[in-house]
Image (tube, rainbow, N blue to C red; front, top):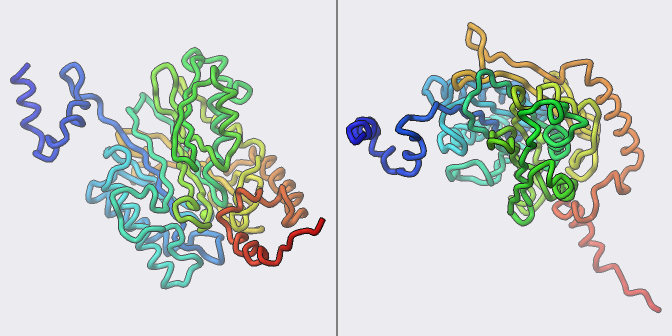
Length: 407
Ligand SMILES: [Mg+2]
């Protein structure tokens, strides 16, 4: 045994040996655990064309070039660049684990370079989400949104990545609840013996910066009591209760809480695993058969209907919206997004389907109803939710003009 361990330790560099805990965690029963793969989706609004509409081609070109170079250097295995409205989305497959400094630095430098180009082109809100100047090892808390998941690949591992624009961190609470806790949405919760044990949800209190884990179905009502308040609580992770298999991860950054003022919407991203003891891809997509209301839209100050769209329609127009969401499906194989023979990742544009036409029609009908109300609640967010918006400056100006009412 001693000889065996000596042989293994002698193959590690001094840097590896520094972190003994991490090293020991990679051994069990004297064997090296199977290799793990990591999916990272990191997004940022670095500037957009014609207001807050869309990411223009020159920024895509920079992102593609930077990530291609990173593949050649062996930092990532492969990638897919896309946009959710004005947000540039970097989907990367690698084997470096979550919150890896090299991966986050790659994303940060890509966004910085894109923001420089956006400035040269005088694109709108160039570098809007880059809230800090110097990279400190992790993009969390610096403006960009991040969802990451390190997995032990199953025999076949279907993944769905969602990216939304003109909305806030809690906008995935509703679909995540439907997917992993609602048997009226997910038949597998009733039919599949591997799912009947339920799922665990990590909920972040974005105001207090605290987290709690609740298990469904036992704590379903308590979970709903929290996550119904979408402006404050956001589901960050979901695990299968029987074996703690990671099933979903989403970004929960509140830009207004980082910056202390309104600087743009959070525009969250989410990764969900599907099939074989988890909800089927069809069950993961089923909550989007109908539209639902989210916070965001114009100036991040209004309720708006979520509209599921294909990548071609991933652009925001009317009243800077309506809030849109795209979904891309892929398989993960040996640390990479499964690719065609020429090397391009094979991607399914899941909302590019007439099956979501009803949701899109509902979204527009509800958008018309809300916009008819103009600046009256509930079309506009409540006073508490408007705390970080520019309306505070308007109200401050009026403050001195208020006089006590004589009895
Ligand atoms: Mg955006």
